[in-house]
Length: 217
Image 1 (cartoon, rainbow, N blue to C red):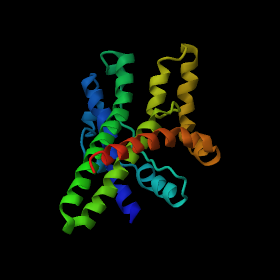
Image 2: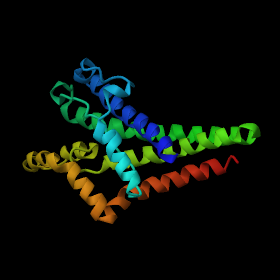
Image 3: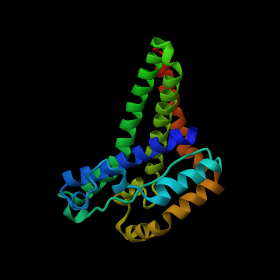
Image 4: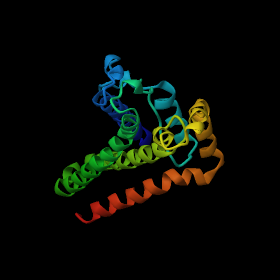
C-alpha cells in the first residue's frame, strides 16, 4: 500500500522538478525545452522508465532507507542564456527550489488533512490515507532537493559547482558526468555515510514539519 502512495507523489514531484528547469530556462532566453513540449505537467513528456519507475521500485524493495528517482533530462542550450554563468546556476537551482516549495505545500496539506480528520470523524480513515500521502510528499521532496544538491555530475549541484571550479578542472569534471549515476548508486549501496548526507537533512526538516503540525493539534 505504501508504494502505491509513494510512486504517484514521487512522479508528480519529479515532473514539477523538470518543469521548473524548463520554465526558468525559457525565462533565461533558452526556448529549447519549450519547443520540445517540456513546459508541461504531462508526465508522459518527462518520465524515464528506468529513473522514474525501475530505480524507485528497486530502492523500495531492497530497503535502502532512501527513495529517489529522475526523469528525462530537460534539453538546455546554455549558449542561449542572456547571462551564461548566472543563467546556468539559476536553471540548475530551479528544480531544487521547486522541490522545497512542494515540501512546504505538502506540509500545509498535511496540516489541513489533520485538522479535517479531527473535525469529520466519519471520514477518519480517508483523511488518514491523505495524511500519509501528504507526509510522504514532504519527505520525498526533501530527499529530491538534498539529493540534487550533491555535486556529482549530472546532478543539479554539479552545475552550480562547475562555475566555481578553476577553468583547468572543468572539462574533466564534466566528463565525469558519464559515470555520475554509477558513482551515486555505488556510494548509496556500499558507503553508508553518503546515504546519511541525504537522509539527515531530509529527516531533520521532516521532524520540523511534524512539530509544526503538532502545534495545531
